[in-house]
Image (cartoon, rainbow, N blue to C red):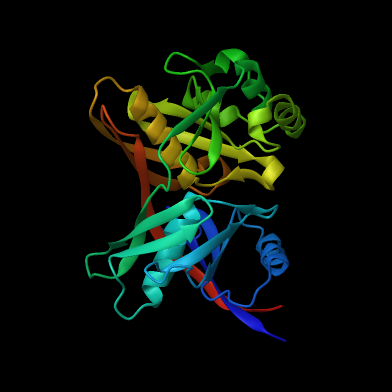
Length: 302
């Protein structure tokens, strides 16, 4: 029976058993779509990645990303973690990788410790910021088991934003209110049936400012309809959030960096560093970075 190697890493942390766990299959050639989905469901992490030969030899690899419920075109922590895994396996790892994904090309820059060894990655989101429909405050509050007054709308109303994967993004009035949030599956189901743009799924990112600082944020992400009740660290959502907030910042040319903490409430503290840039004539582009720690490796027969 064929077997395939896997590696697991914790992403957006420098401490083992923190951050967001990820399973990586560094050589997934020969696996069928159904087998990839089965393996992702077996690991039951937020995402599992499968590395395949690229369509264009100028690129590093084709990377497919599966949640327990299905394949997605882009995500943050899978790219950070996969870049880290490939770098640690290379004799002389390059400074950059380029991954082919459903949402486009993802550029991965390898971060290094003082001794030169890989210890994380920074990725550029494959798409510029796009902003979709507004979502009623009451709907967001119901999905998070909060009161409408817990949702802050001074900076922006709840809305759909994406840099490769769409999220409903909403600000919460305080860290205390954010900590009280609990996903309501029935409310999520009502939301996706009532809002066509959500296309049958709803990834909800809630964030609060820490001590009123616009660039120090605490976040939580719920996606129960995708098999992820709560994600410990969501790089694609953090990049979208950074792009959204930067787009709203005063001035024509703006570069901002955001220090985002996530996963505290579920015992997986994570630290994400997101940046975004806008100028008067171009799109808003974002990146997200973080550390990684190796955890396990082995082989799976399929």
